[in-house]
Image (cartoon, rainbow, N blue to C red; front, top):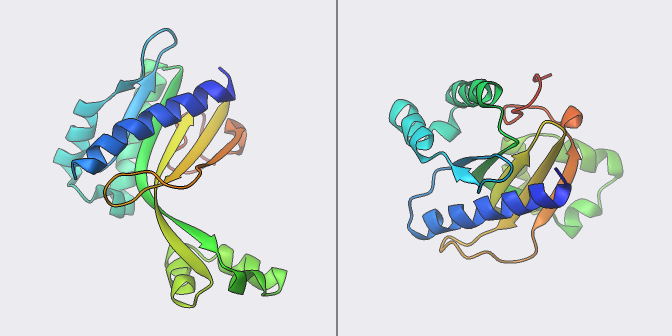
Length: 180
């Protein structure tokens, strides 16, 4: 599977999620792809996770671990050619104030985590943007596709799209291979 196909799957999933955002019904989107078939949104599984863990499960580390462990089990059993997950997220973009700091201080601020990033926003070091983040992956490659979104669900600006090898991907969203 090519990077272009992974990017296309991510964009398809983002457009599906956008409809839910516009209806004020978006929590997350989970989808699988089998070559030769359309992208399949797993609405019943999404609903089951909300039923079991509540609408705010994405804000609880233990619940996220349980959900993504369950998804990983399903991916191992079902062997889809690709998996896509879309979630709302914050993107922190550096300001000129941050860029004026020494490189080692910039790195420390960038690596301080989510709560630290919010503090840096208050200090004028980052701007914060709401994004829909799609992670499309197969057993070899990962596409991380971030699209800025308004509360109305409208996309704006250019997306940020990154590709990397599955071997270099880690964390809860890793669906192929073992977490490091």
